[in-house]
Image (cartoon, rainbow, N blue to C red; front, top):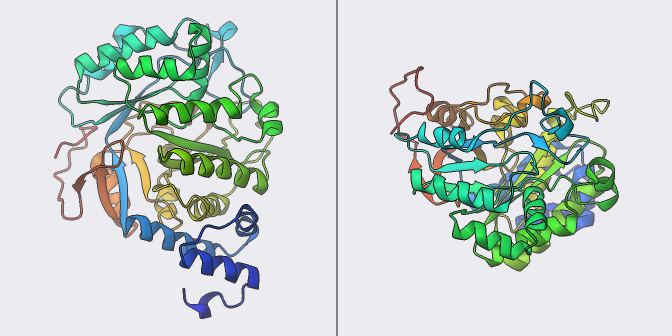
Length: 388
């Protein structure tokens, strides 16, 4: 790092920057110091060193779609705009897909080069472990090559509890029926006092971590998330990331870390203002610097919007998720920037190229499938997902 650029910064920040340059792990206290730093350019520069050390100039994306079987849920999370309680099942925004409707969604992509289906939703009391195991088995019959990434730890805790099996036993059943990996949802914020305040009836921090550790032991990789920008402070974010960093040291089973921005529309925390784009970028940067044993940091573009997703690639982010194809409502119902979360492959590639990065299509576990540097598209606005 050029000393002339940031020589005005305090000595403690200079020491942190040297540790990062030397590829040394920073402490939780140093992570908090970075969050408290107002020099966004410094944080971006430092996070980009880590980003490019790990992934060069590449930005990854995949071709995926979401299935959300229901938004009816037994839990009452204060920040959630998506779910409807059982007593609200007649609400016009509530839904409960039939098995055949779900299979039809998969069949709709029969001739498309989609590599992943992401299945998450509300925790419905009638949709249990064996129901979902059978569902996955039938999805694999329709599309054997599809990677099934399914169920947050919140859903899994409830499934296993109802089925009276251990987390590892429940995950083993799902794996035997075709589930390949876990998403990172339901982590929210790990501090127990804050968790008790915003989502006290869902799985605990210890249970979330135990479920992901069990998945890793079974050879099922997973993602990790953090909900930020609500009632938490910087020390809570670092505490959250530290627990994930420690588990990654133990198992090495996490694919990527995904910070998720709190959105305040139509939920019980609507009185809390959303944080700024500057805070979003700072959060990505510090995450990239602190989470040194995570190979990837993802910006979930339907949540932060396309423009911020472009900017984030200069603040440690090397993955912007996938095509989505307008098949998720979790963030659009909370007032996210993108109310119709669909990007064609061409649009994703251009979004990355305009950021000065190299667009790389990946599969769920980051095997590189295609480098789009020299690809010329023949545009067709009537197609939602473009073929090669």
